[in-house]
Length: 311
Ligand SMILES: Nc1ncnc2c1ncn2[C@@H]1O[C@H](COP(=O)(O)OP(=O)(O)OP(=O)(O)O)[C@@H](O)[C@H]1O
Ligand SMILES: [Mg+2]
View 1 (cartoon, rainbow, N blue to C red):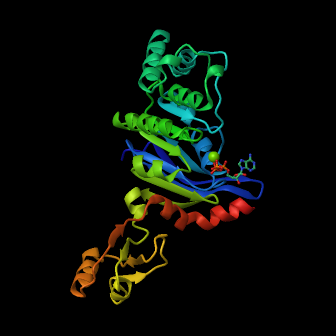
View 2: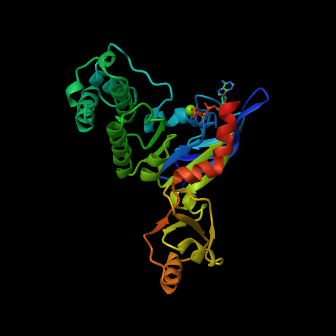
View 3: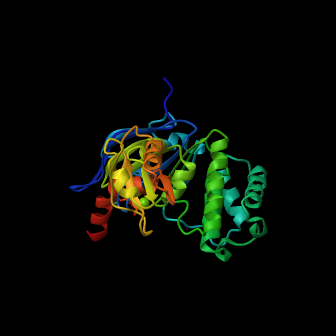
């Protein structure tokens, strides 16, 4: 059986009595983009550092690209650490090329790749700027490009979107999708659910050191019921009768007069439309609302996130 690029098996990391990571197991299959989610302090960075052999697990085992130690396959890994920083006096091109040469790319080729990457992702005119002259977001983009310039098979990015403006967040999504399109595997941590929802096939969600969810984005969304919002004279009362189809839920919609129903599992929203039609109710609004990843995240780990915030 082929091993997956990332495999964690009952991994725990303790600091004294405190379990920063508590018995987590998951795998990331080859060629997937996996979002690594969880509230502040959940244990994402600690887990990532263990994957990269920067920290040793207190117990459990990790396999990276089939190796027991990430160091043995380091030239096939790209890594963006949580604490970002560049060599201030180097130019953007030199910085990216330098990181590529550390991972085995020949000097001339590394420089060519660096120029190409900067051009491709909107930093062409900054090739010869010293890193100290770059804005924070530009510097972060350069650092991401430096981490992938050697065309690694596995890319691990700890919060690649933090500090980027909306346009550059889009560029970062593009960078990740381009890596994915070459068949590579990517794991990235983020607090922004919309990125994960748009570009990930899978998500791993941690909370308070433990695994809260591991699966596809669609599986995550299916943890919450779909909802239907309706507006129309008598619509709320009429649809309330369809107890085997829905149950009313507090409206998550600020609009006046809009009633909201959760669809029971397997229920078809058309049944509600049919009911309204049969009762001669004219509908101003009829919306089927699919749960998004943000809602699933809050549902799974909202309490832990609040507690951590007040600890
Ligand atoms: N060296 C350390 N000594 C003691 N506790 C630590 C150490 N490193 C991390 N921790 C604790 O482990 C927990 C997990 O931290 P970690 O940095 O992995 O969280 P995270 O999920 O990356 O959070 P964030 O989203 O804020 O980056 C936190 O409670 C943190 O305080
Ligand atoms: Mg972190």
